[in-house]
Length: 243
Image 1 (cartoon, one colour):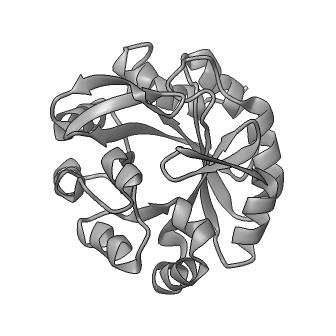
Image 2 (image 1 turned 60 degrees about the horizontal axis):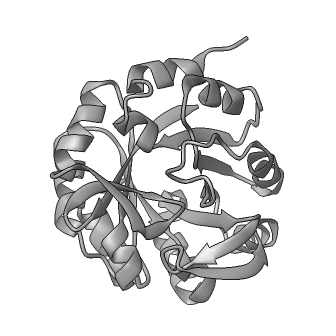
């Protein structure tokens, strides 16, 4: 499993939200590139970049920052936020992202999803963002009644093989990971996924690792790194250790 530091961009700055609320944000760096470079210096082998402005607006807003991060950091970047047209997806690819993360549009626009998968294959990652086991959409602003298992099964049927599972209730709270949710998603995914939400300590990372889900390939960490609960290098080691 790999550790992916999160670089969430809002208003041109690196921030973290609490429980997906745009009203509950903390600014950690005035320049997202500096945050990203710091994680790479500390040993990050990949980065998770989210254009929060784009997620709220429905189209990419911070492409310039995505491109700066992808070009300067020298590690694979997966990026998303507001990717609701094939043109927006292509813009993020052109900005240098190795993988593109599609959220709302993967459920609302199957023609877009099919075209993105046809063009990019497993470079397409679909974000499964959930509250209480049910899908949220539109930058976490809309709550649906669709169970995450059903959403994943439908997406798998259209060729999606990579997912990000985010527990919105825990995101930015440092309350610990949603271990039950991880097990549920792992049982549904025919491919691989990455987990995000609530990581606060090395013990949390070890707990995720000890689930031993073979299709869980990584963990996204944001607030815990920004608040220096542990370093990227320590987090990597916690995920890599066995026994």
